[in-house]
Amino acid sequence: MTETSTALRTMISPGRYVQGRGALDSLGSYVVKLGRRPLVLADDVVRGLTESAITRSFEDVGLPVVFERFNGMPTAAESRRVAGVLRERDCDVIVGVGGGAPIDTAKAAADDTGLPVASVPTVASTDAPCSALSVVYTEQGAFESYRFYSSNPQLVLVDTLLAASAPARFLVAGVGDALATWIEARAVEQSNAATMAGGAATRAGRALAKLSWDILWESAIPAVRAVEHGIVTPAVEAVVEANTLLSGLGFESGGLAAAHAVHDGLTAVDHTHGLAHGQKVNIGSITQLVLEGRPAREIHDFIEFTTRVGLPTTLTEAGLGGVQDSVLRTVAEAATAPAETIHNLPFPVTVDDVVDALKAVEVTGRAVRAEAGLPEPVAPAH
Ligand SMILES: NC(=O)c1ccc[n+]([C@@H]2O[C@H](COP(=O)([O-])OP(=O)(O)OC[C@H]3O[C@@H](n4cnc5c(N)ncnc54)[C@H](O)[C@@H]3O)[C@@H](O)[C@H]2O)c1
Ligand SMILES: [Zn+2]
Image (cartoon, rainbow, N blue to C red; front, side, top):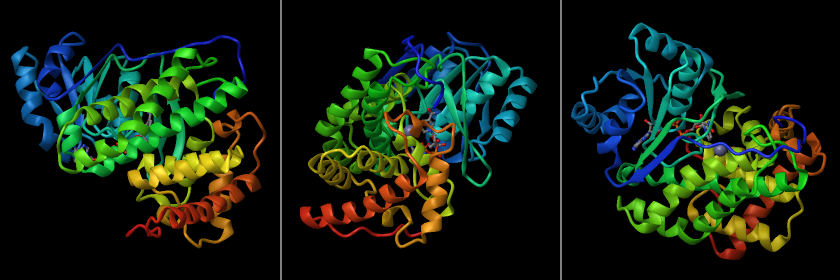
């Protein structure tokens, strides 16, 4: 919970959003409006995928090309290190390229140094690119805190061809992160709790959350199929926009509730560390629907749909099949920590409520699969 309920409504957004096939070729023309000495933060895999296009586009507009290696975990120490590099190299803008982790780190380093930041997601896997916050982790990969900024990234640029060429599991995870947005915004509407933007939700924030939801029910399955073959179709364009822009604005200005709090709780146990953010969020969405006592049909449809998309819908797939109650209690205690967004639900929630809701996810997930003729859940390989 960011604040208690408030009467003032607010909405925040990035300065510019650019999306399309080959968008990376135009990155320089947008970055040059933000600064003259950019630092590009990317891990080795992402650098390999983007270096030639970024170099060409920077050279076209006379920008120098300086890459810095992202070390893999978005910790406070990593963002301080990157801020040090920005100062040492006298850079005046940072460009975070890759998944949510380097983008969150670039935002934190930009805040430390007072510089503008551009997000360049190379996968449509999370809500990180557009938001004015970073999720900070411990070295071990457990959720530590949210860090809020006074502004959103000045630029968000997504090359759809790059996102469609990545393994499909990234887009699938992004769908999980994005479907939660409406589920959470709907609960926040009832409680009138403060959103991540620091005020009550606007109708605009909620409308974008709902639009993201509608697009995903329509287009997520054909988009995942297209991306499995590395092709860009209108469904892929729609889902990349839903995952990145609509859900990004929708979660921040529509509000978070239990789905993300349960995600944070899941990071407190090692069992789930192999899962992507959006995969854990999907377990959180089902947990929230159970806690809310939503109609059986609605829960059934959500589980069946997200199973078909390829998201985990049972504890087994999250590495938590058959674990002792103490493990689920650890998850539930972290999910109900006083600062957690679970308290944005319009009713009180206890640790016991969350433990039982998690158990219900396993039972219901298995039952829905059996009824829908879908295969039994499989535990992750790690
Ligand atoms: N700040 C926010 O508002 C917000 C919202 C949601 C999630 N997050 C954060 O985002 C992070 C998760 O991000 P993520 O799931 O994108 O993972 P990630 O950034 O941790 O990792 C992505 C992985 O994909 C690889 N990769 C990137 N692009 C690729 C491509 N085109 N082809 C092949 N491989 C590619 C990278 O090398 C990396 O190994 C978490 O830290 C989460 O907390 C932040
Ligand atoms: Zn998220």
